[in-house]
Length: 203
Image (cartoon, rainbow, N blue to C red; front, side, top):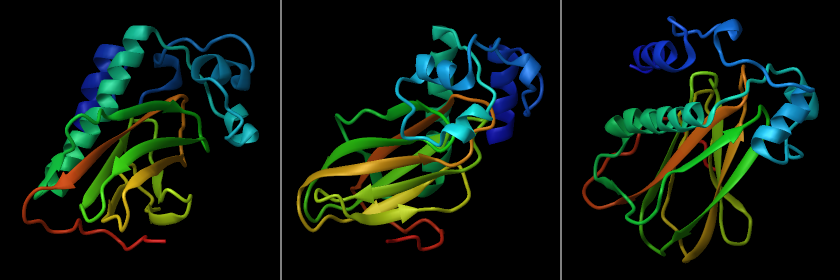
């Protein structure tokens, strides 16, 4: 499902007609070094490995392409959610978090969680990303849950013991052509449920 959606997206948006979009078929690279391009497109890249960023092809995207890549990343959450949200509902008033990242970069998303409520965070990233991880930090900054499986749709579950501001940390492990767009959505339990069939990656 991911491949067919990617092929359609590539042909329409990036001018490619296969699921593996060649570099020459993506938007024209910007001018300057990869790090300069990354900084111009995505702000401060100090929290990423500079060597990895320098070694990654960079592309310049139009605003329309950015919007469509954001929607693509969110569509992959929809795909993952179809199989992993039985008994869960997206939290009302909390918008999806979508961010453009360089390889090795991290991004922190703060969410307000209530004590005793069961939550699930589902992530997804675009076709140039094959591995993204999640960590969940409690209000004190301690990692209490993580998903480090080598895939592009991390899922974490938590039932907080205290209310407060929790941090979902995105870790962009692979990004073959940057920037890569990553997204996350917060769900809470509203009915009977089963846990996703995934390895136990709790901290």
